[in-house]
Length: 413
Image (cartoon, rainbow, N blue to C red):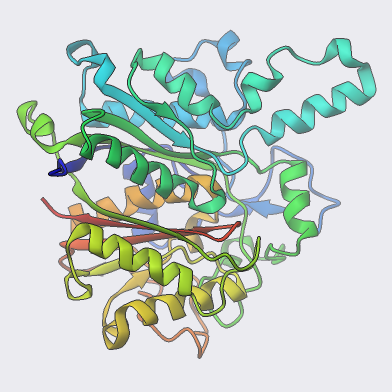
């Protein structure tokens, strides 16, 4: 079977650096940080009190009625808002489309954890009769995907992915395959997360996974830096519109990039720690390259997972070296989590948007806060300053708890 070509025609984000891909891109390339003390919750008694919070977010600005908004967890609201942004950016009119040929794959690493925390408190303090009947529809991982299909009235493939921090990239890869294999012509895909709440933050504090730089939040997330001490929690969503290439051409759509390859693998090593040699991550990259029909010599830029954890950054560096060999030192690779923090299941969606923009704009965003390079992390991480360069083909990597590894290949059309 000949695979149909898949292209990216719409970009949508909700992040601590802005609620549009233009705002996000401008901030990233200027080296700005979106990490601040958290305001929505009182974390004063927590060992970590900062994160990538989406201040002043209001889903009613995206066409959602106030009463309906009350029936949505924050992660579902983010998913809808980012999808609205992406669809608007794409210029697609679903009134003119075969709605059976349009679908949604939006995942979440955790789903509605804020709803779970809130309703459990109500159960324990006010009794079962006061628990909201909307608890399950709010917290289920597929809530974003289901609600987005309702918003746009589209009836094609609709599913959700939950592979921790690999979720967003997995969702995009799966959605691309629906189009490649002729199950759909248009897909809305990405990830959404809103775990910046007491239970979410408390869980990662207990796991000792987070940076504790409370005195300097903006410099806390420092991928590949010698002094990194953990990742920074963030919230938000990243969603793209994918289309079959000829379909996009017929309607005169702007094309940011082509989704050319998709690879995934499992470490089968540890539920939270990566394989220290990066073997699973390297396998995902190799599979993505093979799926794309390109070689390591074709890759101009790698958008790293790069969470700012001691183990993760080193394992990813080793994985890239294993995959690219001597060429590894000559391929620019940056992590934008230094600026945005780590939005867990949303990160792959947000960073695929960033990777598509790097191709579209011939500009590579920097890894900020990389001040004291780790001697063992010795690749070209584009430190602290954006780089003008021609980007024809790029790789996007994401890895998640459970040993999930995902790699995407994007190319200029």
